[in-house]
Structures are given as C-alpha cells and as structure tokens.
Length: 70
Length: 420
Image (cartoon, one colour):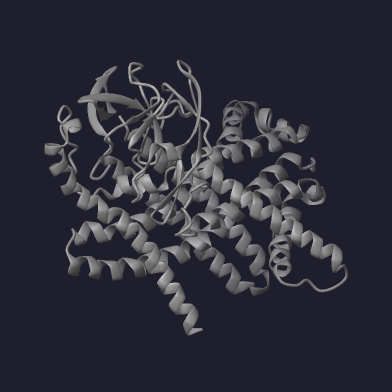
C-alpha cells in the first residue's frame, strides 16, 4: 500500500473533503457570531452537512483502497 | 485528584505494556524461529518463516480484525467455534482446543478436525487427507506464497505439518471477494470476539435502560438521580434535536428505532475504546454497519409515501427531458444513501483504531529493540495515543449522532406530506 499511486488518490479525496468541511465550519462560525442564540440549530446542521461531505470523501478513499488490491 | 491522574497514567502504561509485550515477543521470536528451524524436524521440509521488518499496517489490521479468541492483556480466553464445511459438515468445539500461545499472537499449536488457528482466526486446511481429530502442529504463522490465478496474483497461506506445506483457507465472506475474501471451503458461524462484545454491550444496555425505566416508575414526579440524569440528557437530546425537527408530527412512531440505533452504536463505539478489554472493533466491522444501514434502508423505503416515490420516479415541476436524467440519479440515490451510512461509520471507527495501533507501533519502528530509542519513542507515542484517544471519544459520540440524524432525515424525507 505504501508508496503506491493509491496514496495520491486518497490524498486528493482528502483535499476535497478538507475544503468542503472547512467551508462548512467557517460559515457556521460566522453564523454563530451573527446569531449566538441559534447556536444549537446551527451546530446540528453543521455536523449533518460535514457528515454528508465526509461521505463523498470516504467513498473515494474506500474505492482507492479497493482498487489497490489486484 | 492526584490519585485519579496517577491511576489513569498507570492504567495507560499497563495497556501499552500489554501491547508491547505482545510485540516484544514478536522480535524475540524472530530469532527463536531461525534457531528452531535448524533443530526442529517438523520445520525441515518447509524451511522457516521469514520474519521481516515490523510491519505497522499488517499489525494494525491484525489488531482491528475479528478473532476467534478474546484477548484481555496477555491472556486469551477461548470462544466457542461453530464451523461448517460443505465437504465435512458441522464442527463444534471450543477454540481453547487449539492451545494458543500465551503472548497474544493467537497461533494455535494443535489442529482440530482439519482447522487451525492462525493470528486469532480459524482457517481450514484445504486438503482432505490431513488427519482428523487433534493433531500437534508447529504453528509459527503462515508460510505465504504468491501464485498466479486467472491472471491475478493471489496469496496462498500454508502451515507446516509433517515436513509438508498444507494450504489453508480463510473463512467465507459475503463481500464477493471485494476485500480479498469470497466463498472458500468453509463457513464460520462462531461466537467471535465481535459477537461477544456485542452481547456484552447488549446486556449492559438492557440493564442500564431497565434500571432507568424502573427509577422513573419508582420516583415519578421527582427529579432524576444518578445514572438517570445522564440517560435523560442523552435521550432528550436525541428526541428534541433529531426526532422532532426531522420527523414532524410522526416522531413518536420512529423514536424507538432512532434511540436503538443511537445507543447501540454509541455503546459499541465506547466499548471498543477500552484499551485493556479486548479493544473490540464492532462498529469498525463493515458487516455490522452494513446490516444497520440495510435496516435503515428498509425502514425508509417501506415507510415512503406516494409523494416520496413520485419525487424519485417522476419529479414534478421539471421539464420532461430533465426527468430522463433526474430519475436514474434519484434511483441511484436510494441505494447510495445506505452505502454512505455504512462506509462513514465503518471508516471513522476503523481509522481511529488503526491510528492508535500505529502510534503504539511507532515504538517498534523507531526503537528496533534498543532500550533508549524505545523508551524515548514510548513517551512520545503515549502522549500522541492519549491525544488520539480523547479525539476518538468525541468521534464515538459524533458518529453515533450522525448515523441517527441522517437516518432521521432520510425517514423525514420519505414520510413528508406534499405541500406545493
């Protein structure tokens, strides 16, 4: 597994998820700063959205991992 | 306070020690094998196993995989084996019959009815001419050869007995060979480590909830007390943050399902975090998460109303040519949802367990058996592991919450009334 092109695929998938989750987290922080009383709703939705973005990245990682097996 | 901190640190070093003992032996054994190979008549015909460098990836996989023995520290507790081979029929025996070595490798020194235990897992000897009953073998792990099969490289594992190599099969898996398994010569229906962990968590949960329910009955109208307070916080959290906002007025119908999911996943996640208690990796097993997701799939689609199916097969309010693209995508979406549920929980928990094992494994990568280097890395990796474990504690809650909230949102989308 180590040193194969799979590692590049996994890395690319993680970059995408990182940008996505970073955006979600940043915007959620902004929203909480604007409206501190809505913190509960914002947090729940933030986790939900982060989970959806993460799902796409995980599928990419698992497929990269599987395609590594000859 | 100081006493708690002290006992915590002691506990942690103890668990690290149990692990390191396990792999310290690995290295000692490495030399032992070479000597044995020349003196032991059993090994002559097969040559000895090459003990390579410490392989952190393989070690991590060994530690997170399901096993037929239950390791607590250096002790291996036997579990019942229920094995079925189409050619030989059923076999029932305790995995204690394999006579495992005592330092956690899980290599059995006795073959029982054509089955051997290697790396904690039961394997079947493919050749039927292998003697039945209990046979003493010299088990130091696999002799692995790589053969070509249908143009693909395939690893064949073998054990040594009577100067001959006997090819062995791993248990059949239902993944169709995606993870390197597929249907082999036998099926394993045993109570494995994961099953036992699941039963323990089931018993704990049942005890916890029955006692809390009894407390509510006995102390009706009074403020909650003790463990009741903790369970009420979690319960009300899921009810108010997950069930009510996503399910509308139908929340009471689906609340038991959501609660079962949440507490089952949370319980197993937390149970798997206890380092000295087997470190079972139940929610990090793709079969377990797949079954959970399949249950969700049925609950969502059997409760889907006309409105839900209309939005999948014939989305209202879009031009006809868009529908030709939209319908296949929506149909795919029905199946992708449970797949992502499966993979999310599986990958998060597996990754957490693996990272912890690899951090502890750093000691053996950098230490290479030298005292100073080992001790230095041990201090560093202990700190890293503790940090990682506290993150895993958070992940255990978040993943249980995410699985529940996504299930609730899928059910909510399927049962929503039309309003346009």
